[in-house]
Length: 151
Image (tube, rainbow, N blue to C red; front, side, top):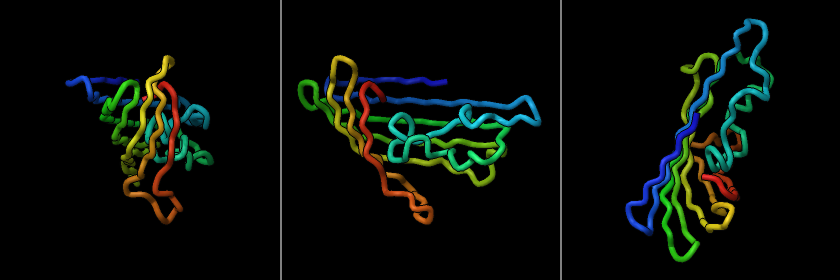
């Protein structure tokens, strides 16, 4: 389930909010949820700063019978001139498996972005900085993302 809200209190600023959640459960005790049917986060559509579908991918070799995700995003867009703008964003969430309480924490990123309005949707160039990154696992400081028509 996804919901998005946009508020434009003045002509030069827009606040965009988005929330997403999902739940999957296998009704069989012998057949886990297939790898391609599980939830993943990370990348330009969920938590910028992470590789695409990186969060949750460490379970591909495990049998998972229950999973859910929480993803939230906030973005403040400043309309600079004509069709150009800049943005500041905050993304967060995580994917939880079988026992959601054990060893799970929410992942977050923040960063700036450039916006250009095109006829097919906004063209975005964002750089997400990972907050509380896992340096021991070689997690980078952040990542550059390009998209058209996405928030």
